[in-house]
Length: 130
Length: 186
Image (cartoon, each protein chain N blue to C red):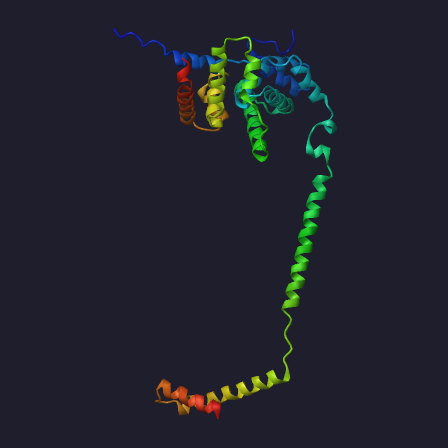
């Protein structure tokens, strides 16, 4: 017949320590808890009751700041997106370019048939320069 | 005899909460007297500090006072009160995580608490407390609820919102860790 293993002293000590309740409550603990229960809500140590206005003011301030930033960004964006005014010289350059490009349209079908690409580009270049 | 008088303390406390829900708060001081030592020591093992332990116990009683009507007598009263207690403990950890911890020398409290005991006992208690606070919170709560507070594995699993096997694993790991830390003291 097997004899059971003797209890491990470390396990026993550990069990004692785990089960122990070394602190005795302060003598006035119950009174303190009851006093806290009796305390009116306005006296309780809570951030909400200390500064109830914080709950309203902070979100409103955040909202105003966000609105201000959005308005600033929007006005900057509209200022940057204005269409630039073209000078007379620029308008003339655009007109000349348009004329040259319209010349290309006339070349396409009749003149470029059966010509390889390099010849076509050379032809276009000389046409633009003339 | 008052309406709370019954065979077991648990029944007394359940009846007290029912009386409180009905508007009779005269029995609450008795409930505090019955549970204060257990709660304070549960918190003390996690905070290493009497003041914090008593503050947390007070907060738990306040919560219990406010939530008496939520007690449905489904589980034991002990499981209910330690569910509230653990919630307070987790809240405290969250608050501490948001601000630097106050400096605290754990040996101070042990010397005050056990000044009348032999040095060897003070040393092992000190080592035990230091080992305990290095455990993950779930392991520490599980082993304390089992061995200090006498809850069942099933109650602990419900309270910690986990499976029975997880509770057993946590408790096993906690014991291995504590044994390792205390092996030189026995």
